[in-house]
Length: 340
Image 1: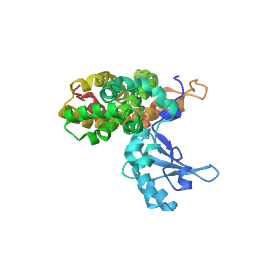
Image 2: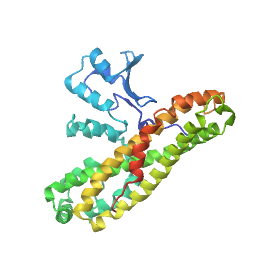
Image 3: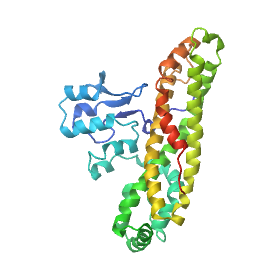
């Protein structure tokens, strides 16, 4: 059994006090959860922290006196397909100020751990901007403030050169590139979480293969072979597709060597679509793995006793349920073309 997932890397649930988003104290004691059928619910708790059941967004709004902006933020979050930090920022982008969005970020230790991934992807981009300086960038906020320090002159000269090549105003270049930098950081983060997920996913696929090979069950469950094969295919396609995408994305390091306005626009538009799809795919498999582990493994990492019939019935209701929902996202990433 694989190691326990770090809470910051869990995409399918979000404690509502994780960041300062809501005015309502009652709501902030609760959390949003994506269930195995991918339906979002609010897991409610009372003032003493005792669970009082799950609610839909409309039920929460009816039961709690929420301000207008709390209502909009809750509905937007409930429509997100993943609750990682970048998907949360994207979901709330139209309902929070830039200052409020800035506090929705990874903790410092995670940013430091992520730096190795970001360096692989953003080295070329940052080299073009920061050439000849000792400035270090760890996220969108620090990139946005690079003109505030003593390296302003050297950086401004680099930005003017880039702006000329991209045919945009030098004053717009930082905000223009900072968005791409954040997306690159998001993809870097998703790769790190995906790398940690691989052992769990392969373990789930191994259990699914053993279930698939139980020929004696096909008499009682005639659809078992097809359903388990669909899960095996989806899992394998996910691994092959994401491995291929991340291998290709490493080439972004050389992207600014031959930058053109067209290439920059295409890359930015494409990766903004890609990172949302990747976040959803990772979240989807986290949900399936979590359900399977919760049922068939105990807290000490040992398998619980179960029959093949029990495993199949649970598999059908959880792992196989809504399996089709990631097909379009996997296909999108599989066919992704990055002009690098």
